[in-house]
Image 1 (cartoon, helix red, strand yellow):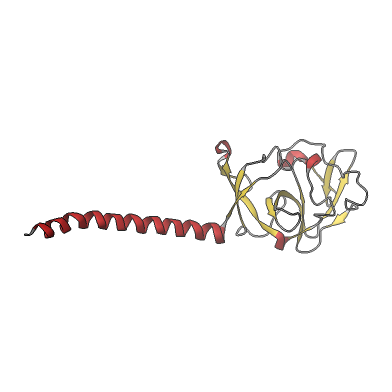
Image 2: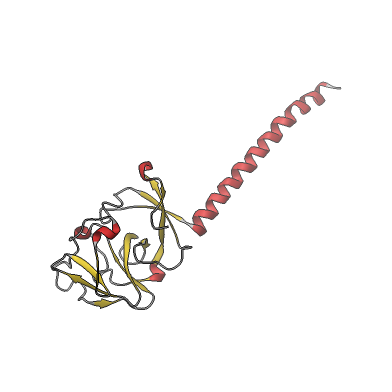
Length: 192
C-alpha cells in the first residue's frame, strides 16, 4: 500500500465524523428556527405592569397553539401600543366587566374577581381618574375580544384605557406557557 493511500484512509474517518457533526448541528439549528418561527416565541418582559408575576427582563415562551385565551391566561398583545405588551385575561367575549370601588376589585358578570385569584394583592383594582383616557364601565366584551389587565394594577396601561381597550383576539400573539428566565422560575406556568 502506498503512502498516499495510507494517508487518505487515516483522514477519511475524521472527515466523516466532521460531516456527521456538521449535519447534526445544521439540523438542530433548522429545528430550533422552525419551532421558534411557527410554534412559539421567546418574549422579554418590558416594564413593570405585570409585577409581581413577571419582572422587567423576565423571559417567557408564548404560543398561539393553546386555543382561544381564557380568563386567567397571561397573553402577549400586539398592535395595542407601540411595543407588544404582556397582560392577564380577566374577561372574554360576552362577559360584562365593571369595577367595585369600595372593594377595589374588578367584577365579571357581577361576580367579584379578587386579585388573589391571580396571585396578586386584593383591593388594588380601580379605574384611574383620568377623564377622556379611560373607558366608561360597565362594558361588555365584544365577540372575538378579551379584556386584559396588568397584575401591577396601579402601573399598567391595559383594557381600562382607550389606547388599549378591548383586545381583538387576532392581536393576541400567544398565551404564555413557559418561564425561561430567571432560572428560579424555570418551568411551565400554572395556567397549563
